[in-house]
View 1 (cartoon, rainbow, N blue to C red):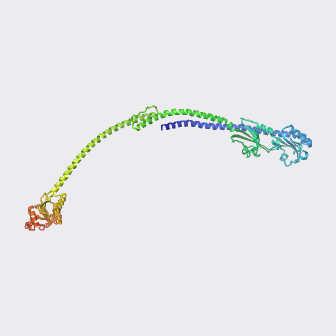
View 2 (cartoon, one colour):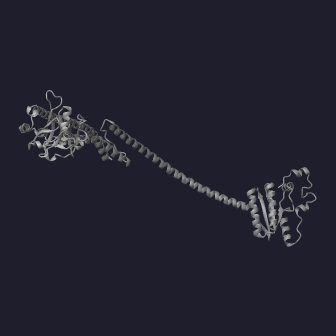
View 3 (tube, rainbow, N blue to C red):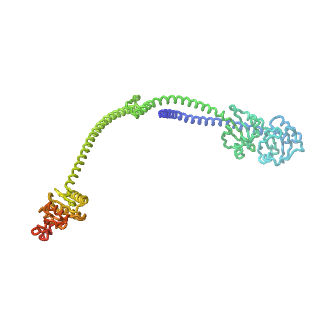
Length: 555
C-alpha cells in the first residue's frame, strides 16, 4: 500500500508536469511543421513560377526571332535555292531551331531545311491540313504546337508558326514554321538548385518527364502523372496548384499553357530536408522533456517523501493499534491537515486507552459480581435441595398420615374394619376408597365395617363417600356395616333420603363384629340398630313433612 501510494503520487506528479509540456510541444511542433511546410511551398512556388516565366520568355524570344527573320526579303519573296540557302544560314548561325520551313498561302512548302539536310524541291510536301499552317492562316496569330521529341537525338521541340504579311495584304502570304529546340531553357530550368537536394523538373500534360536533372528518370510518368494529367488542360491554364507530399518529397506544381504548349514546372524537395528545422525542434523538445522529467522526478520524489512519510508513520501506528498496542504515539511534524490528522490520531489512541482502562475495571467488577452471584447461587441451590428434602419428608409423612388415616384392620377372617377419623376431603375420600378396595381384595373380605365414630364433620361429601363405598363393596361381593352413627349423621342420612338397604348400621363396633362373625358362621345375627329403634326412629323420610323432604338436597 505504501509503495503503491508513493508510485501513484510520483506518477501523478510526472503526468501533471509532462503532459502540459508534451501538449505544448506537440502544438509547437505542429505549428513549426506547418510554417516550414508553408515556407517550403512558398519558395518552391516562387521557383516554379520563375521557371514558367523563363520558359515563356524563351518562347516569346523565339517567336520574335522568327518574326524578325521572316521580315527579310529572302524569306518573303524568294524561293528555290536562294530560300534554302537563307534558311540554312539561319539554322546553323543560331542553335535555336531543329528545322525551318516556309509555306505559301496555298499550304505548299516553298523551302525546308533541317540540321541533317536540305529538302529538295521534289520532296517538298503540301501542309494545307497541318495545324501549324491552318491556324496562322485563319487567325493571323502565331501558333505554338505541342512539345514533341526529336526522332534522332530525342531533344524536346516546340513548333512555332509565324504568319508573314505584306503591307497591302490582309491575309498572310507565307507561313514561317520553326521547330524550336528547348535544350537550353530546359537545362537552365533543371539546373536551378535550392537547398541541398531541391530540384525543378518539366513534365508534359500526361505527367511524362520532359526534363530532369537525372537523365534516367526521363520519360517516366509514375511519379508525376497523378498530379498533372487531370489538371493541366488548354481550358484550365490558370488552375490553382497546391503542394503535395509523395514518396517523402514535397512537390509544388506550376502549369504553363500557351496555345498547344501544355507543360508544368515541378519543384520538389525531400521532406527530411524541408522539415529539418522541425526535426531539430523535435529533438530540442525531447531533450527539454527529458530534462524536465528528471527535474520533475527528483522534485516529485522529494514532495512524495514529505507527503508519504507521515502517512507511513500513521499506517504503522494504526497497524500496532489494531494489534492491541495502545501505547502508540506519532510525532506531529506538519502544521497542515496531516498535522491535524496526527493530533487526532494521538487523541484517539488516548481515548482508546481510557476506554480500555474503564472496560478493564468494569470487567473486574463484573467478575467480582459474577463470583458473588455464583456463591449466592450455590447457597440458593443448597437451600433448594434442603427445601426439596424437607418437602419430600413432608410428602412421605403426609402419605404415612394418609395411610394411617384410612387403616384397614382385619378383626376376623374375611372381616375388616375401616375407621374414619377427622375431616374427609376429596383427596382423602379417594385415598379411603382406594385403601378400602385394596383391603377387600387383599384380605378376601366378605364383610366391611365402616366406623364413623371419629368423623369431625359429616356433610354431603361424606355421605357420597359412604354410598360409593357401599356400592363398590357390593360389586366386589362383600357387605357393608356402618358403626358409630351419631344423631348428626342420622339427620344427614335422613335428609339425603339415602337408601338404608345399602348400609347396615349397628350401635357400636363390638356389636358389629359379633354380628359379622355370626353371619359368617351361619348363626342369626343380633338385631341391628335401626331394627331395635323402629318404634321411635323411622329409617326413611316418608314420615317427614312434604316441605322438609323437598328442602333436603339429593346426591
